[in-house]
Amino acid sequence: MQEKKNRGSLFIVSAPSGAGKTTLCKKLVSALTNLKFSVSYTTRHPRPEEVNNRDYTFISRDEFKLMADKEEFIEWAEIHGELYGTLKKRLEELMDSGVDIILDIDTQGAMQLKEKYREGTYIFILPPSIEVLKERLEKRMMNSKEEIEKRLEKAVCEINSYYKYDYVIINDIFEDALKEIEAVIISHRVRSKMINPLWIEERFLK
Ligand code: 5GP
Image: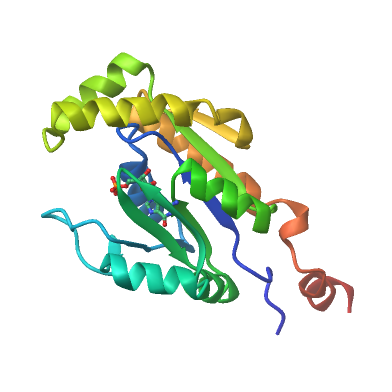
């Protein structure tokens, strides 16, 4: 029996920190079927609510460097002094199993991935304004003033890359932003290109 579709698709989501990307990605995974979250590796410490291998796989800097040297990451980047990366094997296995994957990665990582997976769908999330972004970061409380400034600086730098993405979604009203990303994913899934021609043949042309 032929499968309707051969391989899972990649949805790469980037946004400045505080744009609400992580919440959006989590909601998407529970709202849509056949969509899984790509769990990254990181050297940063887990936050209180985070679970190892669910939110991230937490490893030491030495372990990370060793894996990077062995080219085990399809992309990786240093962000706010910590290392983050996507394991090539984990991603390939998920894609081969036919599920679609959502990756929550920064612009450096997204651009590395774009060189290898042109066929991926690249989505950029914007906050409604820089003032709102600042407010959101301050509300999080976990960041010091200095860290907020650092994140805002990086945000401006990242926003400059918006045009390298296929879609730009403004996260002002959360439910609207969620609907828009869902629409992007769903419309990608029903593209004629996504159908395995052998599946059509077996079902309709024999
Ligand atoms: P946080 O520490 O707040 O969870 O994430 C910080 C930044 O790291 C976010 O912009 C997030 O998208 C990015 N990030 C998370 N995982 C990866 C990854 O595997 N690769 C890259 N390049 N960035 C990542």
